[in-house]
Structures are given as C-alpha cells and as structure tokens.
Image (cartoon, rainbow, N blue to C red; front, side):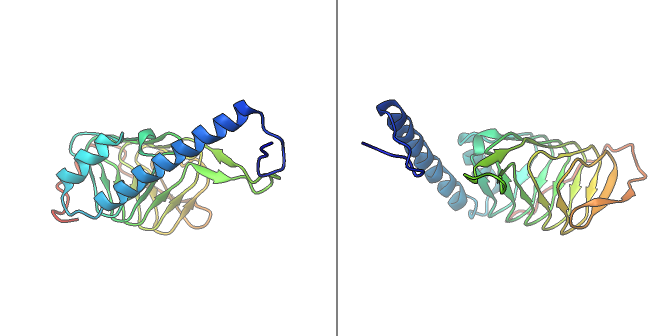
Length: 198
C-alpha cells in the first residue's frame, strides 16, 4: 500500500499520476538548468535562439542579458524592443506577459507563484503577471504574483510590488506605493542597442 506525504492511502491511479508529475518536474528542472548554463554565454543571438527553442516568446529586437533565471519558460512572453537586465528572475509557472519597449534593470525578480502561508499544506498559489508597454523597472525590484504594471509606469529600485500599479505612476518602497506620476504620457521611444557582451 502506498501513501502520500500526509499519510493518505493512494489508489493505483493516484500513484500513477504522482509518478508522471514527478517525471515531468524532473524534466522541467533539467530544462531550467540548461537555460541557466545558456544564460552565461555572452552572445545575445545564441541565447535568444535557445530561449525560443525552449518556449519563451521573444519579440523583435528584444534581448535578455546574461545570467537570467527562468522557472518554466513556456509561459513567458516578451514584446518587441524590450531589454531584460543581468541576473533577472522570470517566473513562468503561470503566465508572465512583458510588453514592448519595457526596460527591466539588473537583478529584478518577477514571481507568479508563491506559498500560501495560511494553508495547512503550504501549497503554492499562482497569479498571472502583466507588465505593459514602456514600463521601467529599476534594479533589484521584486514583483509578486497577480500584479499588473500599467503602461508607462516606473518602479523605483529596490521596491516590492504587491498590487496593481496604474499607468504612468511612479512607485517605490516596501511595499511599493505611489510616489509620483510620469509627466510624459506620449511615449514612443525605442530603447536602442543592447550591450554586446552582456
């Protein structure tokens, strides 16, 4: 007789499903590890080829700098002319949609899965993250599950974004709060060329 981690007896069907899920998770961990190694190679074209091969949708002219980390790349979509900085964490365990002309600085962490600390089983909860066009996210920002960052918004360095950010708002702090508003609402710039060996 087989039991789960809580001592509940498992039917053969439940056991089969658990084994298949475990194998899928092992394969996903191998993909994530390969992407981590690929992320250390200093060639945008090389990295982009493999990122796309493993399921990340990357728009025209967008780049992901070195040492980015991914959790399930298949749910990540990046628009055109977007730059993701070095050491960024992009969580794809739920949908992560990043728009066009978005500037995400170094070591930004975007999560769309977290543990339910009030649950007896401490299970994961998920929430889609959407970052609209022309957003700027400063270094070492943390974006939590279920957040939408509106068009043209600015997130100051080190902020922790726990709820929706309105378009053109400037937010900062822990948790992030509105500290200003972007005056220019007619955004149509291009971010330019990424650094060659980043």
